[in-house]
Length: 389
View 1 (cartoon, rainbow, N blue to C red):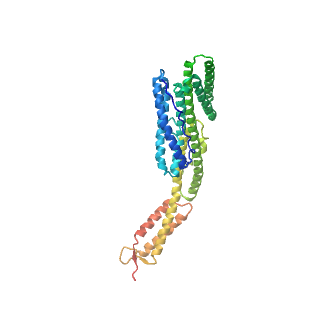
View 2 (cartoon, rainbow, N blue to C red):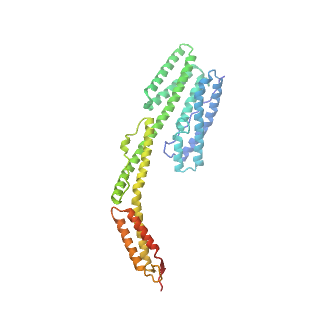
View 3 (cartoon, rainbow, N blue to C red):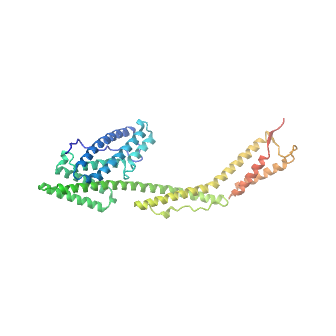
């Protein structure tokens, strides 16, 4: 039993591109069209599934049906996320950029394809299944089914042209299938019964198109990862140059500075082209980034501490100087304050020594810390009280 179908469902064209914040009207139109596509595709897939179950060779459709169903579910889930982020049109620029990532980025658990690629894959596989199942009158005759296979193989050839890295063996598979469909078409025109061989050809063509779309998505994903690796390397090179300057400054201005090696990105070599090598390379980049961050902190810390100690010395010295204009500092252990001159002299001496150490190049931070601690201890022994009038 065959079912007559209306015009096949076609996925809407996505707005913008990855990282680009499309306008709210564009996103609204896309969400509405994607919602209609989702509902229509689901209804169509239910009918295709029912027809496949009734077919004599039902098992031959299982893999493609499972794939197209999983793609549809991933698209449906992503559509719901997009609707939530869009927030009835209240999405700001940052939210619209996030929507761009959701549209053009990889779907969760869907063979690494994007939303756009998944909808296209659903369209392609559903059309192939419709033809193989003779699901409508135009695909029910051999000529119509041959035309559908030829169209699918043409799409395969276009994917091969766009992605040269897919390999000559895949291009060879496309060529072989094109010759097979041409031969079967010739035999069908001569009146031969080609239903058996053609069913095999349809299955082979469907698998090839499915594999090509997934491979193309993987290559696009690989290209994005290579670009990300290059961008990360460029950022690390800039940080590496800045780190060398900080390390040189620290060595010149601080006694006993840290002794850490500055990572050398040149030792990693160029960004690889292959997936396994690229993944290993990106892991090494993360290690370099961690090493750079550790070295940045280690070399910056002594310089920052010196600045902080000098600021604290200046602030406390200014406060003490300001206080002496209105207060009398009484230093001592007895009522007579006989120890005041000695403590005042000691405080002045420690202050001068601390200032001298902190101004010295290179600066001995250990000595500066000890002097600042001694100075603060002396200040603690010097309570202030208002001068009597």
